[in-house]
Amino acid sequence: AQKITQTQPGMFVQEKEAVTLDCTYDTSDQSYGLFWYKQPSSGEMIFLIYQGSYDEQNATEGRYSLNFQKARKSANLVISASQLGDSAMYFCAMREGLSGDKIIFGKGTRLHILP
Amino acid sequence: NAGVMQNPRHLVRRRGQEARLRCSPMKGHSHVYWYRQLPEEGLKFMVYLQKENIIDESGMPKERFSAEFPKEGPSILRIQQVVRGDSAAYFCASSPQRQGAYNEQFFGPGTRLTVL
Image 1 (tube, rainbow over the protein chains, first blue to last red):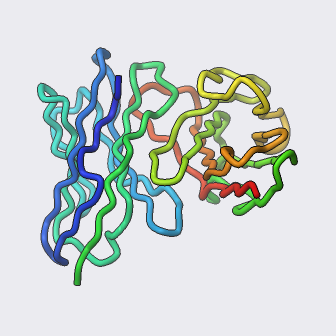
Image 2 (cartoon, one colour):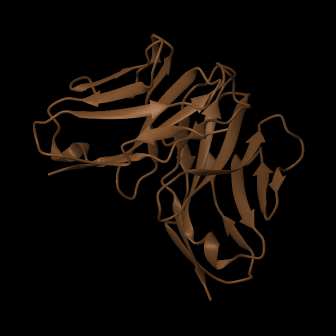
Image 3 (cartoon, chains in turn purple, green):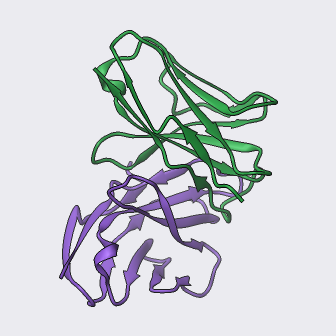
């Protein structure tokens, strides 16, 4: 069963608009962590934001926020005031359990910001 | 404080040759993870190592692939007798100690392996 589902293979957004990238996950663990990574065309993996399953508030990091809806098992990434440099692949990922070592990645969403 | 270092950044091999990918974790990190990314895919976990120990190799192909993290020096991912299907980006990540769900892994820039 797929653990991380990103249903948007690609998105086009006008510069300066806000954008929401969808992510749903599947786990039976009570303790887990959710991550978003950005992968620009240069290929490196850039950590953006983290949400713990017990965190009561949604995580925020600058223009990035994570809309965490635990009951729905969704962890959407919101980018406010998008910029041309935000064009990249975005991966949602999860780490399971208190002793979880591996991170499980979704297939990604390719975001294109239009000038 | 240098991040995770991987070399080479690009590696070209012919079918049947060996590929050696190196990863130096961040200073103070004793745990290393290897992931593989096929084109247009997310990263897939391969192996998790501590110094001189393989902790979890559930994602490693059964043949031709091996990994080590010696007491001194970088972690090595070794692929013997490479085939075209091994062409991918290989990422290394490190963390300071065995941690639960609440800590991130720091990723290196990746090694892009091309098998001709």
